[in-house]
Image: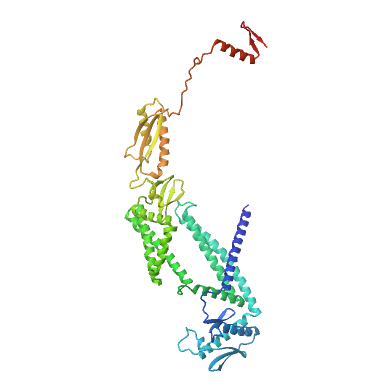
Length: 547
């Protein structure tokens, strides 16, 4: 059975792997098929086997940069396939340096071909000499990489690298398992296996393991594809497509996709930093001041959102975003909130009121409708309540302001619980009072002051009704305390020989004549009729005869 489940898990892993591979292949094909937005047409790269040699520009309207680059690439590929030693020469024609390779025309270098990042006063002749050396080096490398010896050695090296990567992948899994066990031992002993700390730790470890394994295999793929000339070419095209797609302007011809991603990363870092600073403030400063847990949570939440808001404004200004241009967006967002996000806005406003007014605080024991539990977190939209069954209930903030909420811990956690008790008729009521007070005093969680009380409620149908009133300072434990007191009450009543009744009723039946008097003739007729059905007749003289 264990092997069967393992085989199922293995098949599911391979299925997910192939699904991811198909999606990645579709994205790659889309990058190749779709031209990158904003791709510059001023320069075109000359690439041989995935190695960029230089870039050329457009000389005339009919001769574009791409056309010139494609012609140069075709000439260089022909030399590579021929296997001949590349002989690159510079011949001056029409006052411009012209490059020839193995007696084939390559291109004419003009001032437009000088790149913008070139040193000042660079001439076409100097640029042509640099290109000659680059062409000679790249063509020779391409010819060497097409030899049988190079392909055999590179293939063996690739197999060895894949095997090493496989063992590294397995080793990372073992290392993460050891790390997980050590981190679990460092957690508090009261943390159970289903605790959120354990789940968070497992999620972080699995995420880092996935990233580490993905980095290993991506590095292997990049290295192997770079070793072979054909795969290097497609790798270069993919890399260039991704770079151009990410760096092309998408917002107001200023910000590219990579700029937007960096800005989002900064905002995520700001949120994480604000959360860390808030936790540090809560654990190091607020707890040392000795203030209540609810006030600590309110101050921490206010500081967190203040840091995020102020930091976001500063970040946008540093990034160069004109905040005045966001006024239209803010007004549109306000309209959207007014129509589509009414409940969210109402709960957000209620959360602010709860933080400042503090009718409920973190740690309070509250009762909302049918739910009763301890407040664990007060968020911007909802409040998390942990019930006595250890179940988290998410309650919208507005419900705490619109409906009645019982807060057993508000300002003073001391509260009174009522315990009704019934005893049998004939019991000594003074002994009943003493027995109930003894049961209350026997419980350690019942407060001595205010003192417990016993009220005589009245005469019931089958019992004398009393009510025991006790005071406690642990409202979240009231269910357990009430159950314990009932046990103590039962023992105390039994000790004082006081009977606990059960419901009973007495039924009295009275006998007598029927209120209807029948005449003698009618009685004889009814008797005759009944005897007739029974087969017996009564004669006129009173004697009986059978039919």
